[in-house]
Length: 108
Image 1 (cartoon, rainbow, N blue to C red):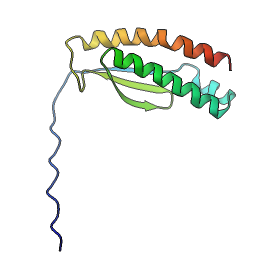
Image 2 (cartoon, helix red, strand yellow):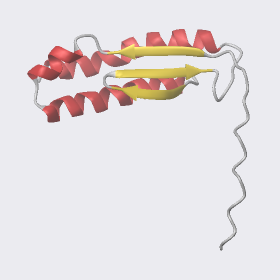
Image 3 (cartoon, one colour):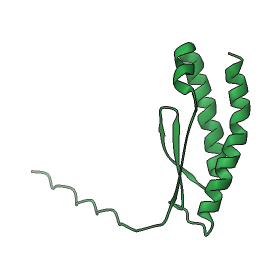
Image 4 (cartoon, rainbow, N blue to C red):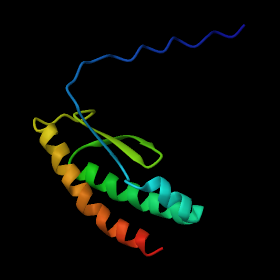
């Protein structure tokens, strides 16, 4: 009988203070009902790319994409003294970054 592999060590746990930033597209459901799936895919990809760019610019990490939502964390895995401020600045940057995406979506 072959020897079983050594057990995988349990992940270490650590308590941290993190800032979570959640954003989604207002009116995405009606928009998705009125456009072709390929157009929705393209809009969503452009939106996710724009949001990811802002999150990374301010030192955050994308935790999850779900539907038209993005969840970002500031303070995990990288920690900065001003993570909460970075999240607020990121949110403002996201609002500016979505404008060109929204304009192209309106033209479809």
